[in-house]
Image 1 (cartoon, rainbow, N blue to C red):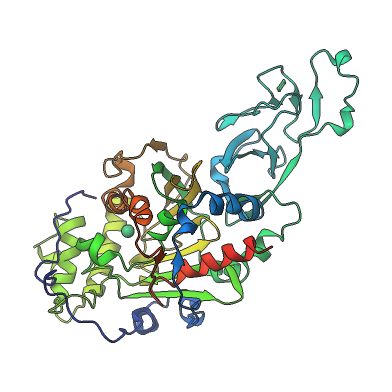
Image 2 (image 1 turned 60 degrees about the vertical axis):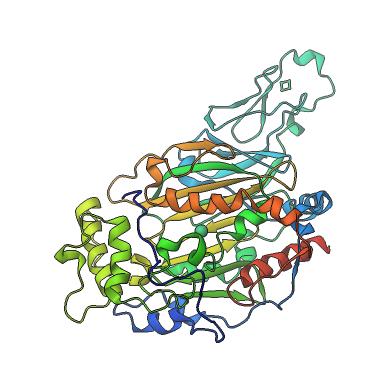
Length: 469
Ligand code: FES
Ligand SMILES: [Fe+2]
């Protein structure tokens, strides 16, 4: 991995004379995936969707108004399934994770029988948070006056019990919060009457049958504060339209115009994209050669291969075929993993799911990313977390570090993020300036693309469903 971001598109992109674009290009994954030698997960082909929510502008107040922020807290966050913690971060009985969001605080506790319970993180005595950070405890003892509960939430001990005649011990258990698991991730829901997590996720559970995350571990998490609304941050990661301008070194390789977006009218809680790698952007003119597409990868990510016979196309080889050949070799040599039977959709491309409201997960091996977004105290700030979940063989490695960064602190220098860090820095370079820009708007609305930004409209419609009831 390298931070050498020297790749550029200048021979194919003249900002003074961008190419005219009138006709929608083909949805590339629908052409490429069925032809791949090793078939992709069936869902990527079978569940391709033509449906997008109706085109309409998005009111900027949804990102900037304190009233809308408050409505989200009261009607949406209070009733949706929120990603709490990955199973591997609380592997042993007594492992506890503290999840805070929009003024709520919850502890997620591994039980002695291996199950997981969640409780409101509030002492029933005088309200102190029982735990303040990720920890391990044999029982839940409040640090203030030492009221103590078992890991199961049953009251165990009261100091000066004679002085609390009003407390019925049997009824003084910690109030529970709904917690359910999908794919090794525990989600919490503050609404006791919410549907189960799996019915909330709908058809997505079935779509994931071909992806196995039992051989993944969390190698790093970066928590980065941002001075923008949580939705503005999330929007930057659910479309590839911005790749052309914001990640220009990638435009030859994983372009804006080679992405399929799928959402369904009866599935409000998830959407997805699949982005092809090794297929130059249709926005580039003249069309790059296949060798240039390959070079755009090796020059940035594998400079030791750039310009060598290994980094050159062999007779009749396409860039996508060469990228596969190189990826199989790199996985074998650097990680000891045999990925020769892995489909290109996993090895090269990027698939990403959004689980409403705030969780993004990339099932593909190539980009093992998970994002979570949480609002700040006002609509103008948020906390954005990026995690990598890497494949492993043999014994599961211990989870990696959690790095905390403030507004303005660079993403590019986190060694565990590898090549992802400089890319995320490019995203930050937009996000630092979006809230002020939105507030300066002369129209009061965002105009989003019919197809490529349809996922933004889709989740906004889901927010409206919650706000309407
Ligand atoms: S506030 Fe927890 S023991 Fe008093
Ligand atoms: Fe980006």
